[in-house]
Image (cartoon, rainbow, N blue to C red; front, side, top):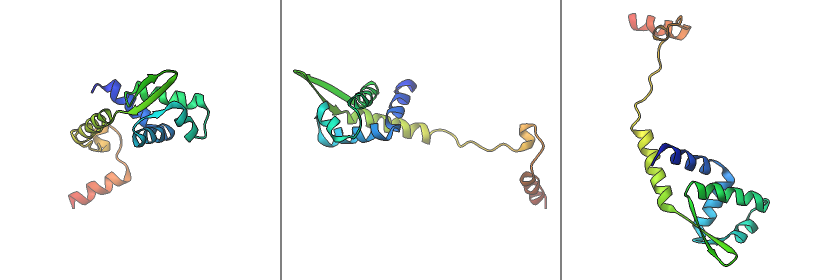
Length: 120
């Protein structure tokens, strides 16, 4: 998964309403757009925006049947995202805090006490 797609999915999941919409779609298997609009106390345009963001991230698929659009979750994309998130977090080395002397600044009180304690 490339970085752009990873970030698009992260952004889509970061919005609480969008995440809730995804949960409802996933729990139902497949839902018509009108059914989603009925379940949330926001405007239809807002729901459409959230659905577009979820679709652009690849988290949902749409199927047209006549004038209706049916949506379903794509759990395989979410699984791929979770695996990628885990790999990115686990494989990164822990960042070490640099002391003031290595940053080129005067040491603060805490660093001075730490040095004194290690010398004693």
